[in-house]
Amino acid sequence: MLFEPPLHQADLHFRLLGFPVRVHPYFWIVTLFMGMQGGSTPPAVILNWILAVFLSILIHELGHAVLQRYYGGRPRIVLYGMGGLAICEDCERSTYPQILISLAGPFAGFLFALLLLSSVRVAGHGIGLALGDAVRFNSGGINDPTGFSVFGLTLGWDRLASPQANEFLLNLLWINLLWGVMNLLPIYPLDGGRVVRELCLLGQPRAGIVLSLQISMIAAGAMVLVGLSRESFFTAVMFGYLAYSSYQTLAAYRSGWR
Image (cartoon, rainbow, N blue to C red; front, side, top):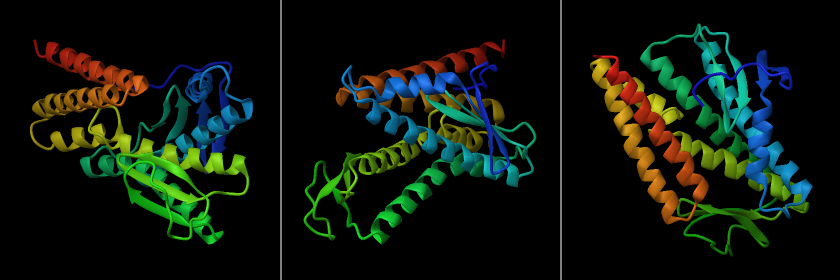
């Protein structure tokens, strides 16, 4: 999650909006396993999920890359593992541009989700947002509700005529909203963790690095507890890994002082 993976003979290469894009084969493998619900998941459902993840992560990284290019860089995008990287060795490195570059990824996803919902509304389908889980909408023009609940909120809309299109919409909204919010957590190397690091460095750089990694460990540890309380093994393992990664980075950084 921290470094660009080495080139692989199975890499997919293309250009989008002038940016070189490389998709590492591990991206497809990890996405495939994330989309499998036991051994009975229909291939069409898995393919729907893979396409939604690919498009969502690509939009996220494009958000970073557009700002990197704005600040004078020549970025490239790599998708791999559970996400991707917008890599730029020559863009502006000062605090303010780096914060904006970090925030651009999640907010590109939020904007994409807003455009999707606007398109659904323009097409004549009702949309609703309510507090609580599994809320049944009986207002807002929603006659045949579908949607999902997350963070104590339920987003619902009038079901689309095509089951495949409705599933694709649900996947896109879920990924862009949930992944965007998770990326804003103050955990390194997530975007929120990068923002916190830049803010902490405004004081004393050495103490700022230590503080940002300490915040990262605490926040990641809290998310492990959230995952365990909700019986989400994937959440607990992922944030446990990030907590341990921050701990290792902090230990290595402190050992460099000696």
